[in-house]
Amino acid sequence: MAFDVEATGTPSGQICQIAYLIVEEGGVRGKNFYLLTDEMGEVAAKLHGLTLERLAVLSGGARFEDMAEEIYSDFAPAARLIGHNVSADIRLLRAEFQRLGREFPPVPALCSMQALRLSVNAGYLSGGRKRPKPPSLKETMAHYEIAPEKVSSLCGEWFGGGGDFHDARFDAAASLLCLAAAQFRGDIGKILPGFLESRVICE
Image 1 (cartoon, rainbow, N blue to C red):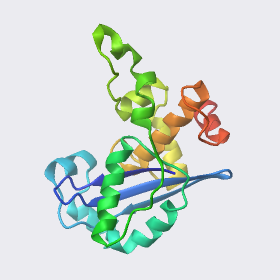
Image 2 (spheres, rainbow, N blue to C red; image 1 turned 180 degrees about the horizontal axis):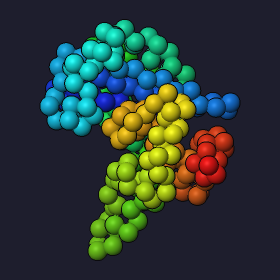
Image 3 (cartoon, one colour; image 1 turned 90 degrees about the vertical axis):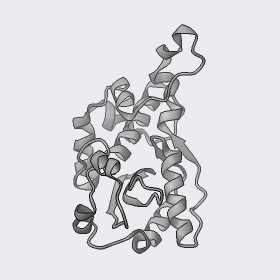
């Protein structure tokens, strides 16, 4: 499962959007939820465009606690959680479930930022540097020749929409496609169904 969240950027760290792709041998299913929050940081709102006013409309009044059971039921059986800087998103999810007195399911995670850092930024090791810098999602996409238009198109198919960077739908799909491309090139082992490689390479 590939996922991404957008948050308030405030000390509470509430999630205002969560999008995820359930990858099965038969295809990919996307789910996206906008969630009403108590506050919204100014910097976060400028980044993802989700003001409290917009959330009131997009969420239909639903808060995290209203969707927690469905989210848990989808995440718990996943073989692996995929995302870009995925540990940060898992921390936010864990905090949301803890506020409800529940534990987030212990699912192994694979971070596209960490797993692909050497492949994307190998040149960064020149000049005596010992480790390549963690690549941004945009840098990772550029390295694997994944155009934003490709991601947006598949977001339309999987989610019914997807916008651009910092829309959780776009970021979740982009992370998945980057890992599929890396698998095709042999930069990582086989972790994804082969049909995903063809969605990236052949279309």
